[in-house]
Length: 289
Image 1 (cartoon, rainbow, N blue to C red):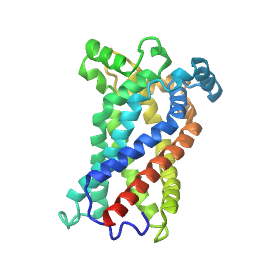
Image 2 (cartoon, helix red, strand yellow; image 1 turned 120 degrees about the horizontal axis):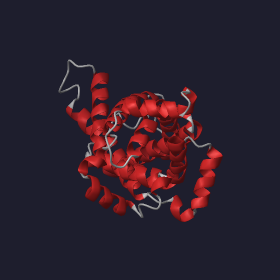
Image 3 (cartoon, one colour; image 1 turned 135 degrees about the vertical axis):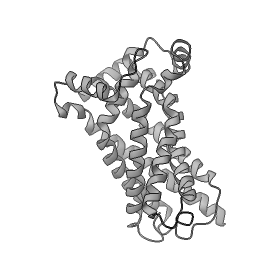
């Protein structure tokens, strides 16, 4: 945070997790309807008009159906992302490894944080099923879906798509934290809380949009893998080939819904980055008062 981190007071590492948790909750409560719309486009290749019409037909009651898993998952995920990144970097600091490049240590910390986030795969698994219209009549809520998977398919079924999530999270985290650090180096010094929120919203939104665009096909493959309930666990490249053939072997069809996706990401990651930094700013202010 431009000018605010150079003389950072000592404070509990748990505060990093708390700020991330608040950022994740704030984000999901605002963006869930848009996330659901984009998911329908990604999974079924629908034009935006048809996807909107589909959600309108289902009604307002079902619009927020399935919010509990992403709320829990995203709040915990962002908490782990920021908290573990700072924790791992404190352990892999230049003081402990003076001969290792500091940027490499930051990248390693970001990647490890991404791997740590993957323990939340069951939340993402249940969320994916509840957002797919084919399961609207099969599952009444998150608990129903969780019990069904547990009783009929076992623990392993909760981790379908795990490899794609580990790859996505770890790689995206490396890009996010490196880009975020670079962006913050250009922030004006001695910023007010309002300007802090604005600068971090813009930088976080742009970085998030870039990352989500890069990993959009990865998320399509992950979504397809996780909408399968039972049966063999297909390899990612087999699922990719299946989707590619279904969409007429046209690369552009793999990016259907990308416009809404990066619009969502600008809003989503802008909210996450700004809320995290604002919470951190006020907590640090309280610790010095």
